Length: 318
Image (cartoon, rainbow, N blue to C red; front, side, top):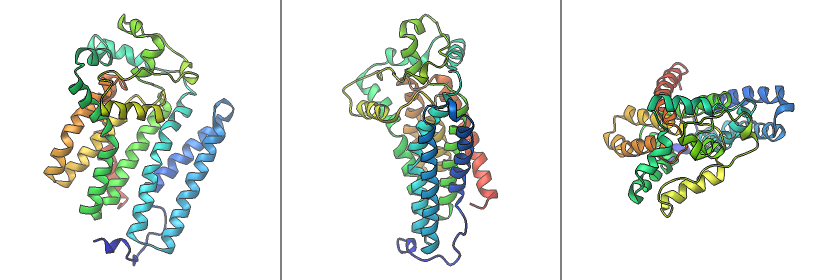
């Protein structure tokens, strides 16, 4: 199996892979938006430069593959695009800050649905160190779960690996499109801006363009000396932006991963991932990254995206 990685393919792919087409389409669409609103954007040159670098990197990897067409190069091409997701995520903030913030709407819906703010009361009601660490463990398991599914498919279901990667990547960029158009920052930013006391009183003022100039958020609640607590806090400090709250892509992508695990018919894989999936769902609200309606919407959209892109992948013969 390992030797197959280096074997020259008899019928190499001539054009871009489906995963790369997803990236390039999103790249071009958002580049056009950047150019149209160039004068209104804060960092348009960095956005344009970053897109050029990603396009060049993609074409260079394609050129290397054409010179040495192998499973190894296909794997590298996919892994590079997945690694670049960390660049694309904060980029959504640069686009959606063109629009007025909508958290007052979503916090009001949350209040109307539940009669209170789950993100405000969840951690206050259950604050034990063990429970807190479990929540942070669930949230920190996000990228390891993605890696687990990708590696499993590559090793055990090689013929379906590229379709698996396509479903994951297409789902990510579907969420990014939503985030570009829907400026919702989530409780950790909104509660901090308004004030926790005001939120507790049921006051949800509109913030306009406040988050264009302020990126301060609440410190995550719970047991502050835990290993997983610090992992979550470090991740927030490294790349968190006031963006991408609705729907929760953490819940949505994890839902996609669960469907991909179910598709393998491997019960051990499915049962291993299930506790992390449950923890992820509740953790997004517990650490105040999302409203409860964000997590619920993540479940729904994740399921929709899985079946949509799996069907699309089959039609494209990925």
